[in-house]
Image (cartoon, rainbow, N blue to C red; front, side, top):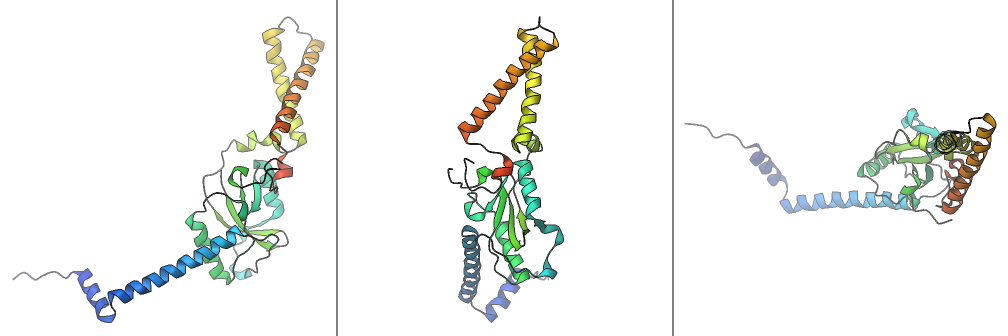
Length: 239
C-alpha cells in the first residue's frame, strides 16, 4: 500500500488554525501594514517639509565614514557638473521606495527622526521659483552631511566637459578664445583663403571673437543663465 505524501502547506495551515483564527491573522497583518504605511507617510511628510540649517544628532559609533561629506566637497562637485544642492521640499520627482527604507533603517540605528534633508541633482529635478543622478543627504552640523541614499542613472561621462564653460567667468573666456580661434581658421579657409598673413588672421580673429562673445552674452541674458559657482544652492530657476 502506497503511503500518502505529507503536504507541508496543509500541515502549516493546521498548526496556524489551531492557535488562531484566519480573521485574527488578517487583523494583525492589517495592523502591521497600517503602521508601516503611517511610518512611511511620516517620513514623506518630513521630506516635503524639510527644515533648513538642521543638525541631526547621529550616534557616532553607527556612522559610516565613507558616507560623510563636507559642504565644500558637495559645492565643488556641484560646480563641476552644474548641479543643485537644495532642500527636498523643492524636489519634484518621485522618490524610490529604497529611499524610505534607508531613512527608516538609519533612524532605527541612530534612534532619531531625521530632519533637514537635502538632495543633490540637476536643476531640472527641482520645483524652482522663477527668478540625471540624485543623492539624498541629512545634515550633521558644522557643514557636514551624511549620504543616505543614491539612486537613478549615473551622470553622462561628457557632462563635466559640456558644462565646463559655464562653471565660472574664467572658463567661459577661455572657451570663447579657443572656439573663436578654430572658427577663424574655418572662416579664413572658406571665405578668405587668399589672405594668409598673420596680421590679417589676427584682425579676422578679433571680429570672430566679438561675434562669439556677443552670442554667448545674448544667450546668457535671454535665458537667464548664470555660472555654476553662483547657482549650486540657488532656489531660483533663472539664476
